[in-house]
Image (cartoon, rainbow, N blue to C red; front, top):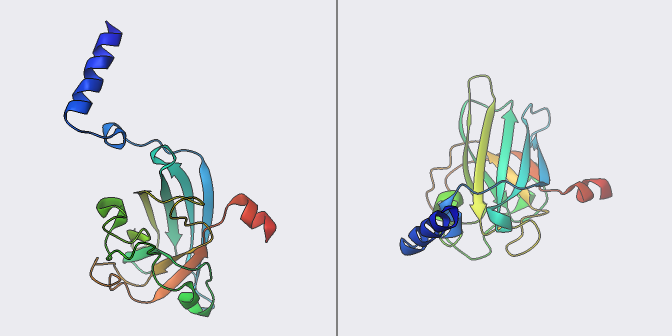
Length: 186
């Protein structure tokens, strides 16, 4: 009886055209990298940590982060092209955009319709603390569309998802996506 029920449920999902990723919440796998955010201006009190996990059965990444010391409100957060936080975060270059897509919100719009680095916003409370959790299908740490070794930038303003880069303003914190091995090699 259980086998018949499982088969019937499977046929139901197939008949309505759902992909495996849509049938159930994606499992978060093992942590594969970490980012330590620090303020881009000397004496800044902005800090943060972002943990990166395998997601979508190895076909994506989940970003889970905490920020402290930032001004209250929404702050855009993006993966940038280069892994360099010098020059106030400007050396990180533009948003990571290997396919030349327009700016958007990659967890919602998917990487076919938004830069893979468009992670949205972090809402910071009146105490200067914020957290976020976003999942992006189609990027990896070191495989197809790799983000390992690139910078993550926290911006001074809210990402309004406008073109070409979300109008999020200056770069107030920066950190490099590193595996444990990367950190040990430093």
